[in-house]
Length: 158
Image 1 (tube, one colour):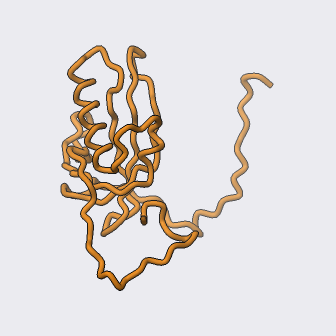
Image 2 (cartoon, one colour; image 1 turned 180 degrees about the horizontal axis):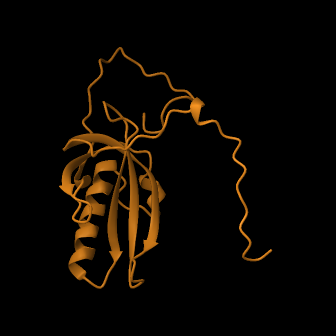
Image 3 (cartoon, one colour; image 1 turned 120 degrees about the vertical axis):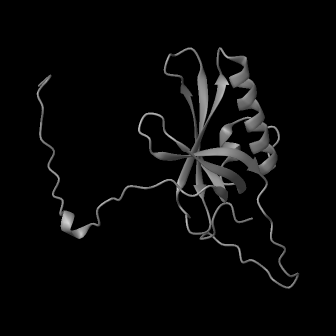
């Protein structure tokens, strides 16, 4: 019936699952990442749109942690749009896709992001902010080393 609330049957045993923990901001620094998701969203006031990019760290102590960036694609503030275009250009150069027709073309390509920690003015807690994008650090493998290819390899492993 309309407006009637129902209970959810969970059949869940919390003793079998470790509780979620609060994730603290990662330390400022450079991290190897890939873009795993992108979505065009409307601004809160509905007068513009931004491209939200999800980055996943692919190596090191913070592997699998995620970071986000929001690029003001359409905004009444031309400076905000210019900043977004410069950031998008840096991302495109870093992943070597210079004329993407769709944001999904930027997915699963390694790049390096520069992360800093900033204080959230509302909560006072530290949060991460991406402040730069660069091509990934490339290691030079000996000529005799070959990397096997297979279905189980990561999409960014090229």
